[in-house]
Amino acid sequence: MKFPFKRVVVTGIGALTPLGNNVPAYWENLVNGVSGSDFIKQFDASKFKTRFACELKNFNPEDYFERKEARKLDRFTQIAMVATDEAVKMAGLDTADVDKNRIGVIFGSGIGGMITFIEEMKNFASGDGTPRFNPFFIPKLILDIAAGHISMKYGFRGPNFATVSACATSTNALIDAFTYVRIGKADAIICGGSEAVVTEAGIGGFNAMKALSERNDDPKTASRPFDVDRDGFVLGEGAGAIVVEEYEHAKRRGATILAEIAGGGMSADAYHLTAPHPEGLGVINVMRNALEDADMQASDIDYINVHGTSTPLGDVAEIGAILNVFGEHTYNMNISSTKSMTGHLLGAAGAIEAVASIKAVMHDIIPPTINLFNLDPQIDSRLNLTPNVAQKRTVRAAVSNTFGFGGHNASVIFKKIQD
Image 1 (tube, rainbow, N blue to C red):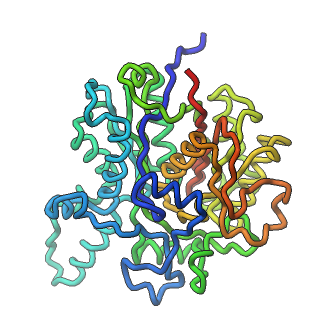
Image 2: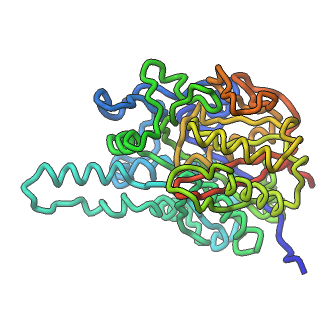
């Protein structure tokens, strides 16, 4: 007998991204094909192989927090809380008469408080060896602390924890939230992810792995998914938040429903530390799992927001997996990589791309893949990769894919709400 799952919907979204500090600005710049990449402002990167990134623009923590409070929060927690506040207010959960024992928070980060760690170790190294650490060092550093601060701010006492699965982190948080709500463990869960690692260690570490683009002569076009001249991803920072809510609960309180979550899939490549499986086996499995979970056919999907990081191996493997799962219907769909504009936000990538997918379903607009100048000949030229300019079309359902180092794969499906 099939378990009587509850319907799950989205009632709020928030975003703090390299393209804008709220959802309207983020979406407008996505649709207009704006690049968020520029030379790094947060530290002197002149000696690094990569000197650019997709940083937040005009973000001042003191616009959102008292100075004393801001100093107790790592940047990744600050931006998590800002994005969450937008989502919570959109959903009306900050003022609604709800049972806060049944409102949870599942919020992840791929790395957590890297800035705090670097600052504390620099201070220690500059001294005489006497350990003088900030008492907030550990609470600022640990990656579950964003979820904790969010719950404390709003008094949400439901399920509360963090996910971490590298770049699949916030999609895993979303799937966890979806699962908890549909089996009745919570009425609503605020989920998402945040990342703030545009630092010496972040850039230097990814440079050492040869993962980042080194196109210092033209940062705006450095993120080039599917392009034959792509040379790695562009590191980004930011946060995305999504309010996941049980359908009847949302209806009873008169919330505006943005989209329905149809299903989610998870899988592992079980192949390599950083490289995708050459046959895309894990990616094939994760999309099949998502379709099965949603009780949907391949032909029901109109848009895929791909992981599409602009790496030589990853882009080709993902497209091959999509063709394997969707077959001839692949040529009827739109595919795009919004990382061409935002860069790669690591643990926050899935959340901001879920927001983009939800907006595509809401508005029937596909954000483009920018910087697609010369298609990689390994990729089928008949595919609609939404090159360089947004496209209007009916979007009944959209898939959002995210994959992480370690072979972690997560895929979620959003569809138009039907009463």
